[in-house]
Length: 310
Image 1 (tube, rainbow, N blue to C red):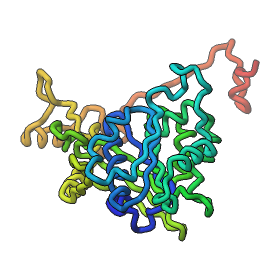
Image 2 (tube, rainbow, N blue to C red):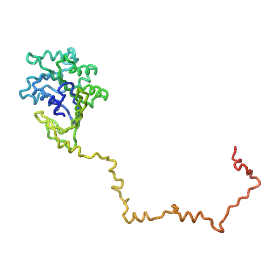
Image 3 (cartoon, rainbow, N blue to C red):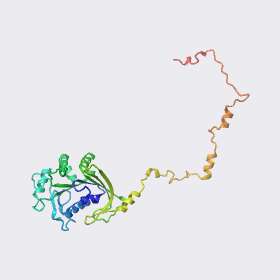
Image 4 (cartoon, helix red, strand yellow):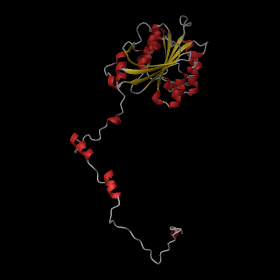
């Protein structure tokens, strides 16, 4: 499914695509894979970068398809601390104005792909209501923004904010690492898990988990063999595997002969039927208990417990 979402097919060509990464598994390589695929489809891509420089984000995308790639620098001085001018307005009106200003005659009629790197930066600097208004732009019929692709570092935000943003997305790609398949020599991304959830216009929700790798040219490779191996790993409870008799200086285990001897042993406090009969059976000449009340005893035969009344 992830390959179809990147290619813009299977109902994933429009709307809002959210990539949620983590510290152990970064999502910028996958984000650049989305950009590269859009450029190969001859779509106009506007990238608002806030966390890395334009040169770093531009690296790997210079293969003749970058003519439709437009960068908006939010990395060098996003709050205008150096120029001492009015801080940049990140509202939807301002972003649309920047997109319109950068259009030429050839790309004027084209739909625009808006890329946010990253959405976490915006959430930390502008109200979430303004962010949600921006993310709803592809749903407007008159909008030229066909698709918004945003990278979000979900560990930096409260679950309420993550849930609100995820609720607005048409496609959510949640990334996580695979420790048993980690490769340290990959220049972009090691093996990773991409859990893709897609909400279609019909209301159908599909979910798929895939193991993937991003190559140097930002092409996506799905590893079906790793998918099978990952599913074959049994989920065991570590607490059930702990042996309390391990690493002891004495032996707690019984041999087969000792186990049979233990089963045949009659414990002294265990009353067998024979022992019960011998104890409870009255015997001739047995002793009796005779009680003779004293003169001071107050004993009433009709109420033997009256002396207990206070």
